[in-house]
Image 1 (tube, rainbow, N blue to C red):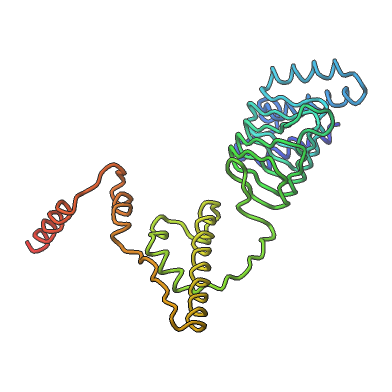
Image 2 (image 1 turned 120 degrees about the vertical axis):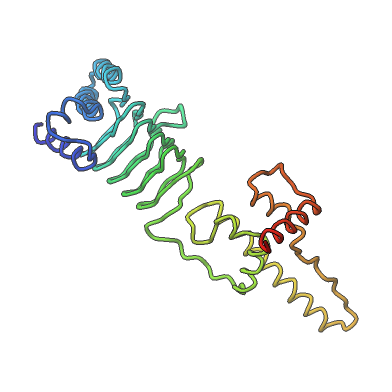
Amino acid sequence: MFQRLREDINSVFDRDPAARNFLEVLTNYPGLHALLLHRCSHWLWQKNFKWLARTLSTFSRWLTGIEIHPGASIGRRFFIDHGMGVVIGETARVGDNVTLYQGVTLGGTSWNKGKRHPTLEDGVIVGAGAKILGPFTVGAGAKIGSNAVVTKEVPAGATVVGIPGKIVKRADPDVEEALDIDPARREAICQKFGFDAYGVSQDMPDPVARSMQAMLDHMHAVDERIERMCSTLRKLDANYRDGQLPALRDEDFAEILEENDTGCPGLRRTPQERSDEAAKSSTTRNS
């Protein structure tokens, strides 16, 4: 018993640089208090003293602001930092060396009996305000970003952010199929659309950026295929005349890029105003 208590306190020192001494952690850390009371209530729950276990759990919630159902199974060296608003459901399973921050919910999405809450394997870290909902597994060493809402299984070592939660980093990255796309043409159309000007690139771990890059790659692939089809038709029929695709002109994107530069979407300058501004700038440089 005292060995487990010392282990729990040492886990606080390992993960909270604000912890200064043994007495401070033992008396002023609600996450530790909630964990110790849960171990008692969980023991009562297993001995079939259900009402007493729930009563102790309710007292723990009143004392610490952390609600852990006595039926939940929690491993060793579990640490709740700050802790206010943490909710852990009845069928949740938490492994060893897991860290939760304030406002985390390990909840369910069904009213049916049975496994309704998530399983967190060893070494998982869950950021403040994150919601993990459903009877799936979050793999060992995974990280859940603050305020993320996770409703699907998370592989080991992955990092999940956003609503709904999206995997932005994996321990073993997916092998992407190499696309037959001319890099020079890709770069040309990226520059034409001002894609890089928005600070988004293929290497960034951003789901929106990856979606935009995938759309651009798809456009390139379609363009290449149409050109091959037209070339084949010209070989089959000398009278075939393929129309030219409309060109992408700078003028088509001038207003959009101008709004991005000014930072005021509702402010547009007329061609005369742009001309006057250019003349004024030239006069200033000459003087």
